[in-house]
Structure formats: C-alpha cells, structure tokens
Length: 279
Ligand SMILES: NC(=O)c1ccc[n+]([C@@H]2O[C@H](COP(=O)([O-])OP(=O)(O)OC[C@H]3O[C@@H](n4cnc5c(N)ncnc54)[C@H](O)[C@@H]3O)[C@@H](O)[C@H]2O)c1
Image (cartoon, rainbow, N blue to C red; front, top):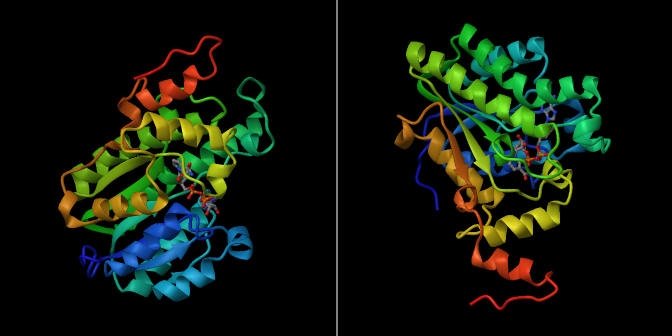
C-alpha cells in the first residue's frame, strides 16, 4: 500500500544491479510513493545487470557512474539536476565491493591495493558524492542522504574481512558530513545497518547461509528482508523523519542488542556431547 510519502520528491539511487538488490527494492518503493529519480551504477553493472528493466518500470533515467570517479559523480549530479529540473531531495548510496573478499584473501593476508579499492568504492565514494553534491548545492533543505551499512562496523563477524573497516569508515563519514550538511544546509545524513540479505554482494560473504540462520535465530523479530529495508529507507527519505541525522540505525530485527537467544541456544546445544534440554 502506498502513502504518497515521496510525492513531488526527486532523487538519485545508486546500486540497483538486479531484482535482489536492496537498491532495486528502494527504487520500486520510491516510485510507488510518488518520487522521480535517476538510477545509476557502473558501466559494467549496466552490461551484466538488469537495470534497464527497472528504469522502464519506474520511468527513470539511467546515468552511468563509477562512484570512485569524481568526474563521473560531477556529471551525474549536474545531469540529474538538469533532467529533474532542479535540486534533489534524497540520495541512496547502496554500494559495496571488496576484491580481497572476492579473491578469498583472509584479513591477516590482505592485498593493500585491493584494500584501498575496498575503502574507495565502499566508503570514500560516499564522501566524494556528498562533497560534490555540496559544492553544487544539489540537495534541497531537509533533504535526506542514506547509505547502507552492516554491524561488522562495530563487531567482529567472521569472514566479513576488510568490508568491516569500510563500513566503520562509511558510518564515520555519515556523522562527520552529517554535521556540516545539517549545520549549513539542514540536510540529514544517516546509515542504515541492515540484516544479512541474499543479494549479489551478500552472497560474497563467507558462510552466508549459516550467518543468516544464526542472525535469524538470534533476532526476536527475525532477519529484515531487502523489501523491509526499502520500506525503512523510504521512511528515512520522507518528511516524517526530519530530525534524524548523523545516526547509524540498526534495521536488523533486534540482532544488534542480543547476546544469546533461546532459539540460538537450542541449536548450539545440539552440537554438545551432552546436550541440555532448553525449555
Ligand atoms: N546483502 C547484505 O547482506 C547486506 C547487509 C548489510 C548491508 N549491505 C549493504 O547494502 C548495499 C547494497 O548491497 P546489496 O546487498 O543490495 O548488493 P548488490 O550486489 O545488489 O549491490 C551492490 C552494488 O554496488 C555496486 N557497485 C560496486 N562497485 C561500484 C562502483 N565503483 N561504483 C558504483 N557502484 C558500484 C554494484 O554494481 C551493485 O549494484 C551495500 O553497501 C552492502 O554492503 C548489504
């Protein structure tokens, strides 16, 4: 059911690759809620993904951009404002990639060229995007900028590798830029820390199936789906959340506040030599 939450609002959505992508679901919901937007991804993602299909469905223009390239971002911001006839109201940064993870390099054997790329693509691109938007005065007052994060920024989760450092940096950039954007332009900047989700990026995480089962058993409300994440993102773009800024908000069914749950303990006990019955 749509509520017209984004009626008349204009934005840019990064990171829709295929219909599993969190950004794909955000685009569908934003369209349902009355927004107009530009979709963007890397030229390679355009070739291998399904973004054309999404653009048709949402009546959106696609502008390719590598989020690490300042020239591409500059072009994206300028063209988006031209196409939409003025300033933007929301931007979604839904980008993550680690070559160390792809090449199965463990955290104590990182390749540093790859590590730099991880940080540039997954975190510094967020700074570049905001610095360029700021310079162009591209976002309206009370606009909302959101990036997607993961709890590995705060806690060690086996196998998340250098993406954990990228997420910690991403969340810090949201706070630091959020201060300046809030003070000078009344624009809010937040990160949403989402449950593990089966997407192309998600499937790259070591032991994803076990991890998702664990977090689901640990969370009183269960894992949050990509669609639920999209709903929350729309709320963060809407005028109903105007005074939330510089926050990392967990959207994870309660996982981040748990230590041990009954469901997880029952499962864990099965592996003991003398399992104890859990009531
Ligand atoms: N899937 C999960 O378990 C999970 C959990 C928490 C947070 N997140 C975060 O959500 C975001 C979206 O990921 P997803 O799970 O939807 O996976 P996804 O693979 O569908 O999306 C990742 C996107 O990043 C894009 N990308 C990679 N390099 C880029 C570059 N240089 N410039 C521009 N775009 C680039 C890819 O083309 C892709 O569209 C990421 O930040 C990810 O870390 C994912």
